[in-house]
Length: 174
Length: 248
Image (cartoon, rainbow over all chains, first blue to last red):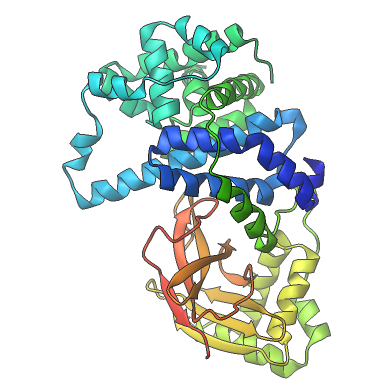
């Protein structure tokens, strides 16, 4: 990472190969449109090059840094698209919050990692929905509350409790 | 404290990027004061990274070459920890160029914006100190001072005065503006070269002042300015605020 931060392109190519499939995967999951996902993934990779010197190892692993940047940008893209659509069609606001079953079905994710799959099974239904709707669908916690028809404070705590269980199950440290 | 307790439960929503607007900003501010929250957010972000890794998909092969080619024209941000380099654009300009060139380039933008030259230089100097390394400021000064520098002027749809200075010899262009409103939260100004209808990213614009554009003008016919999601985009996602034709 230090080399990338100093403008070493060969080092960046190594970083690219290490993270591109995670970046593309999360973009596809959140943006759900292949060509727009590719754009988002490219923008993320270029952002990594731009920001490399600002990576601080004491704040977390490279993978965490990359995933955070990638997810934020993917979410930003879908929210921006939704906001534009809302401005054009007032009824899109209603459309945005679809019935629970439909969204829940769409968010059903095929997880590559056996460990993540196993840990997901350890969550309560509401915890799992809250975490996956936010992370894999890019919904805000207010939208999650509307979709799940649950009070805001409940959704907030379910997201936190869900992440605590996942963290402990996966043995994650920073 | 009740208020802080309420904020503390937002660690999960924050790590999942599920907060927006004012709540997101309030929590980010709270994070700077709350050691425990920061630790928890760090662990949650590492947990979320596992969720990202769990949905990995092989990226399209052409993307690799596209990215590795594009970084040639993308300047890297300096580390945050390093104190800003004391890059004084006005000093560099005075040293490298005669007074006429300075008058022709900087003053053009300043008078266009209805600002005194001195004010403009001060604003530019302050911004330059904060945003640019010494080398970038020198490159910028060199474009503005190039013997073949040509300037075009125009106004954005919001009324800000802009000038683009290009140098064919140096294969570089500088963008100067005054009167641009601060971009909305989570948005950034982005510059573009218009290559016969195809918009090519030319770097992000932190705000008013002078900025060296990323990549050379080449055969671009115009320079564009748009508002984009922070970090910028690969192609414009909003209506241009400015499309300024370059001299043929």
